[in-house]
Amino acid sequence: MKILDHIEEWLITFLMGAATLIIFASVAHRYASGLSIPGVQDWLLSINMGWAQELCIIMFVWMAKFGAAYGVRTGIHVGVDVLINRMSDSRRGKFVVFGLFAGALFTGIVGTLGSRFVWENGMHHAVFSALGMPLGDVPEGPTTPDLEWPTWIVYAVIPMGSYLMCFRFLQVAVNFLRTGELPHHDHGHVDGLDETEPLAPGEDDAIYRMNDNLHPQGLDVADETPRKGAPK
Picture 1 (spheres, rainbow, N blue to C red):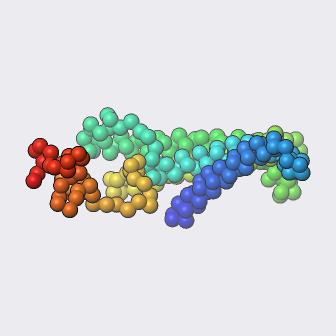
Picture 2 (cartoon, helix red, strand yellow):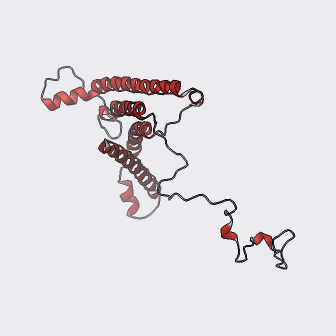
Picture 3 (tube, rainbow, N blue to C red):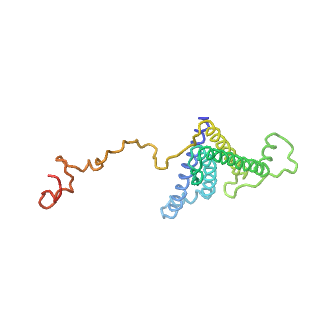
C-alpha cells in the first residue's frame, strides 16, 4: 500500500512541477521572440511552442484527478459537517460510513462509464491493432489538435482517477470501521517546520527585554528615566 501511496504522490508532484516549467518556458519564449537580437530571434522563432498550452491543460487535468484521490486518503477535501458533529457518536458513525460508501459508489460509476467512453473513443482500435485482430468498422478515434495524440489516452485518466478515488473511499471506510478514525489534515501545519513548545504566560516578549528585565517601552526615550508606572 505504501508503494501505491508513493506513486500517487510522485505522479502528482511530477505533473505539477513539469507543467510549471513548461508554462514558464512558453512564456519566456514568447517574450524573448519579440526581442530584436540578430540570430537569436530567428532561432527562437523557429522553435514551435504551440503545443505547450494543450499539454499543460492535459497535465493539470491528470493532476486534478489523481489529486482528488490523494485528497480522500489524506482528508483534505472540504466538507460541511455542522449537522454531523451535533449527532451522537453511534448515529454520526453511521452517517460517516454511508457518506464514504456513497462516494465509493459514485466514483465507481464514473470510472465504469469513463472506461466505456475511453474504449469506444479509440482504445479498442489501438488494442485490436496491437493484437493483430481484424478491425472491421472499428474507428481509429480522434486526436488532439496540437499534439495529435489519441484522445483516448488523454481521457484514460477518467477511469484511472475515478477507480483510484473509489478505492480510497473504501480504504478510509474500512479503516473507520476498524478504528473509528478518519484521516485529518491540519491546514495550519507546514511540513518542514519544527514544532515548538508554546511560551509560558508573560514570556512572549522576552526577546525584547533588557538586562535589568525592563521592556524598552518602560523607558522614556528622551531622558531614559522610567516612565510612570514602570518598575524601578
